[in-house]
Length: 430
Ligand code: CP3
Image 1 (spheres, rainbow, N blue to C red):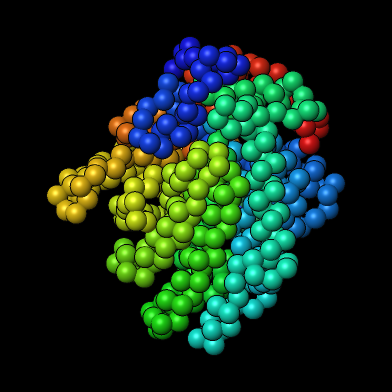
Image 2 (image 1 turned 90 degrees about the horizontal axis):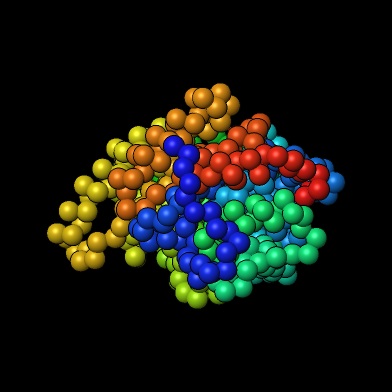
């Protein structure tokens, strides 16, 4: 499958081309299919682990250090040549900026000192506001600065990025990332209200989110207050990233799959729409307008249509998890088009999907993984737009060279594979 698609990262002639990621998000078919990885930053990279150890800060404190956040955002772009950076942060950061006591325990996940269980707890919670006090404002300022620093290296239309001191190999990664365009987009993100509420109510990671679902059924008024608050806080966090220069955003609803479709529709989707509307109204200085929206969750096969139509624009790109067949998901979304066109939606929005390689394949032999990458590309051709990604995040123990090889294969560039894998010196870029 590896062919000779254009790979003219350094050519000035095509400097006005849109980055492949943004083209795909409009439902177009760029010459090269874009690829990035959820959790591409982080523990799979030795340069990340080294810098975290050196800094000696906790995960959430690292997110609020602009230089560190920008550096961690850029590391996978320099190394893999992926088509997008995703801002290094966490879905819990806006809750910290609203004054909650939350930490991320290594190997466990988010833990809250005071879980939100009763109507009184909810009343106390919603008295908090995003970035209201001095600490919250400083945190929001740190997010803005982190995004700006990262965008400074990734570039903007007509103003290619750059940073003195970045080595030759890192520059090659950035050039590969830009492809036919002159810059690389940064994706901003936030957690969806249900996923945030599931952590808030449980107080820590849980398998079934039972306490959250009990509150949802037992006390609709408290649930409404909790979910509205989560939507506003996460929407504001995403808007902060857009106003600082993100070119696209992704809403992560990791736990939406634990709900019945009826409950999702009635008690969760309206709040995800609120969050997306708040984020969707923000204007990005990089693209000079509002930005495209991606909506991702796991176990979501039965609610893909709802996820696509979330928000007032009713046209999200949908992240497909690895438990769902990509071709089936595209058919499912297409089948919805007829219905939507007959109904009040006069404008047909393109079917844009992202996904959905099984993260488990990353540890399989290349002879097994490579055909799976080809099959993913092939299945994605049935969509109007396709962005290659995993069906969930990169597992921490992943060999990063495997991710680079996937990028090279998706880009159809043997040359990038050779350049990328020869002589990466992580320490020089940490
Ligand atoms: O590279 C990227 O994708 C951008 C950064 C990003 C992180 N978290 C950094 C991170 C993104 C997009 C997230 C989203 C996130 N965080 C989600 C939604 C996506 C998903 O995976 O379902 C969730 C549920 C969280 C909450 C969270 N944060 C968990 C469950 C964990 C793992 C805890 C562990 O140690 O296993 C985190 C920590 C976290 N967030 C790390 C990173 C790089 C690991 C931090 C470290 O130890 O270095």
